[in-house]
Length: 99
Image (cartoon, rainbow, N blue to C red):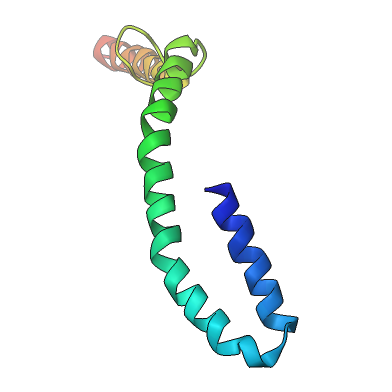
């Protein structure tokens, strides 16, 4: 994969400042390289995606600040929601006790 990228970059640089009589060759070469590079990107994606998902799951499982292990929700949001519930209960109790 990396040698293909290096080959494409050096060929592009040579095509910009190289000899003009090889222009058709470079044009054909780069048109031929497009499917190869696209296939390399797809292959890299297929290989790296399971690895990245596994490491992401490990990081999320190890995270103690954002995610709660009980419900899976965001811990700061859960604390804010519980505080709002407590304030609403207080206001409702005050309203109910009013004559």
